[in-house]
Length: 314
Image 1 (cartoon, rainbow, N blue to C red):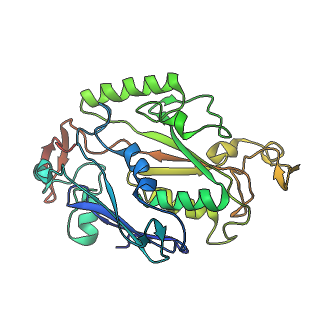
Image 2: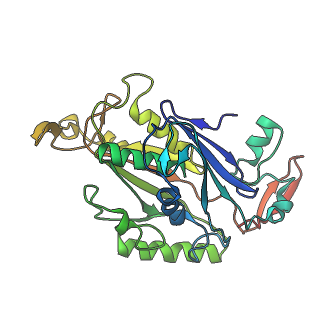
Image 3: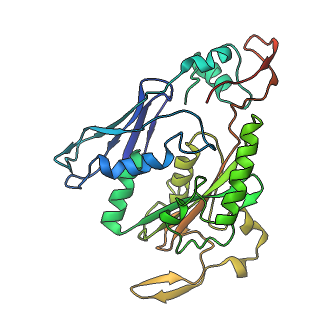
């Protein structure tokens, strides 16, 4: 069972959400980069639970500690270990599910493959800082849809993280954000859940990243994104909508841009032939509805007996 991702920059994760804590080891970052907890903490603060009525009721500080690889605020070139301790873990919330696999959850497949169960489920901030300082790259992600509610008019060339963080659902479209919050709140009250889509744009990525065959840039991005729990789909550039276009409309003509050759349109999503072309890289990731819901569900335990399950996890 591997928990390592990456080639030049490798990230290994450890820990459980209802254990003593979670952490990561980042290996491959060059020496001499200024880095401390203040560079990482803002990203943890953005995803910290308990910030609104829309998320889990669990209260966690999500305070990161750098254990190694950094001295006096500068990277040493050695592996960087990060740790975030848990303070509000309650494994007892899941006791009624020890013998019953949750519908559409990894309980069953995990038990079949490994013979044990895991009822519980930061390093990106370091990579982001390196990309920003070395190349001037900007990475912005936002919730672009929840259920059937879609954000409209989000300009991928100008959208900022500040605009995204203006509301609890992290959607820069204020009207859609309000509708999303209403939907999520009503479903939470009913004990149900809903899925959604997160869009991401990476601006300032140089051309030439990626390989043309098995290590295509979009394949690496897809691997990383689909490694996030609850993901069910990935598309880059025009994605599936591109299948409904003609080649004459979908092609991205080349044009001269200041100090480089660029493209007039960007249906390719910044990647052609598996290699970045210098245009913004944009993609979307689909997330299924959270499987642990409060509604009673008719299912079966590990022995095949029909039972009714009402999850109590947060």
